[in-house]
Length: 52
Image 1 (cartoon, rainbow, N blue to C red):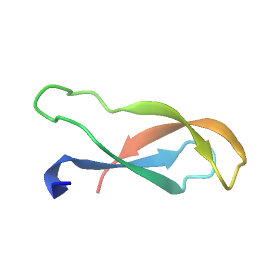
Image 2: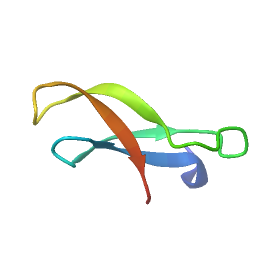
Image 3: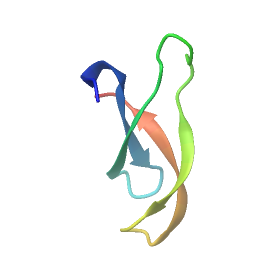
C-alpha cells in the first residue's frame, strides 16, 4: 500500500487506533466513518478517520 493513501481509524469511545485503511483523497474529501469491531470495548462502534 502506498503511504499517501493510508488513513488511521480511531475508536470513538476508547480513542485507540485499531484499523488502517485506504481512501482516494482526490475523490473523497470528507472524513471516513466506519462501524467496526473494537477489541478493547468488545463491541461494534463507529471508527473515525484521524490525522497521521
